[in-house]
Image (cartoon, rainbow, N blue to C red; front, side, top):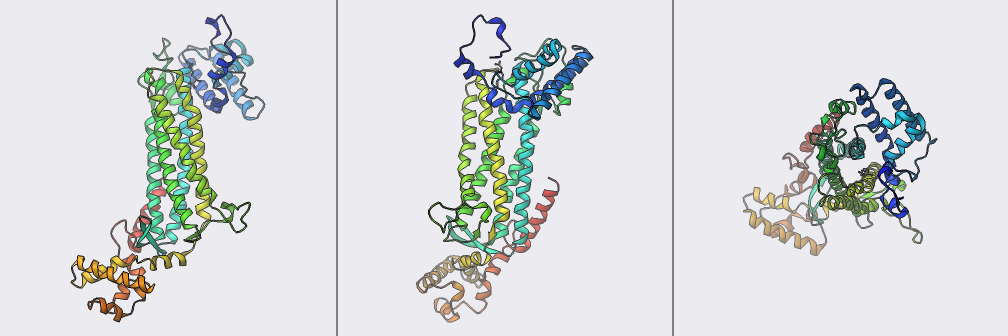
Length: 459
Ligand code: ARG
């Protein structure tokens, strides 16, 4: 057991208590951030003449040596230490002696851990954001190639009106675009440096907090030291933003699973992204999509867990906050993995365009357009709705599509129909007449695609 705080104690900590309290098994993930923060702290201490230049040099060299050794696998972070902060400090003192004991001047583990976690989260958000960018690019690629790929659009999972694959994909582009914007907002709001908050009440040393903040790439220092050590809002924001990302991925996966089913056959997931069955030789299962859908629960769990942990904590730091880490690490890693895997699956997936087209055609998705045809010929909409209802019933009985009826059959139900009904209800007309902004018509879609291209360029 290596503790930083033994002085006041006369008895050894009970081993079970020690284990329960220790965080090294998971906060070792923060070693690089911890060292980076310490280097900035020491540079500031020297600038303020709280440490000498020589001490600064010695400490920085020592810290860089530790970082290097950990990265090269020469130094193992073992659970001999209570947490990552103790590990770094103890190793520093081992290496450089007394100067190492000055590292913690004007600092508490409370502001130290607050900083480490912020540095970590900020880097992770940048990575998540890049993964989202690749996903958006993949979606945009599919859109550009499929402005004429007709498929049924659904409401209530019932075929509703014809759309295009580009249009369907565009809906997800919008969702992940908002996710990107949420990431950007969080990074912006969280970018203040807690170091220098001390345990809760700042410190009596003349620290230059602006300088430390600048060294670490923050916009400035946090403005309340009690909040500085106990704010975990940025993690909650990230976990909620990740929950939304996962919800989007999960919806998309659900569709992929449906589209990939034997009944639909709208897509075929690439072999590299499918798995087989140990007993049924014919099977090719969409396990990746199912796993992404399933892992959504884990990320929601992390959000609920941290919200619950935080809700009863009085100011300022309390040990409960140590519980912010495992859940956040897991949620971040899970979301990153899911975005990457999903992107891979999507970019290798084959779209069976003929099946999509046939499904749109055989599902009466042009019924609204048949009614609009009548309206354009002077029939009131409510009557038109009724007439087309009769047409649909007739087709269901004969097991044909609206397009397959003869003009005589049409006229028998309403004399208003003429030869041009066929063009009016063709899938292509149905889609391409829909030209309001955001609609699936090719011309409208192409305008949106231009906006998306620009969006990716400026990302
Ligand atoms: N392991 C602790 C955490 O993650 C570090 C801060 C400890 N501070 C303290 N006063 N016990 O929150």
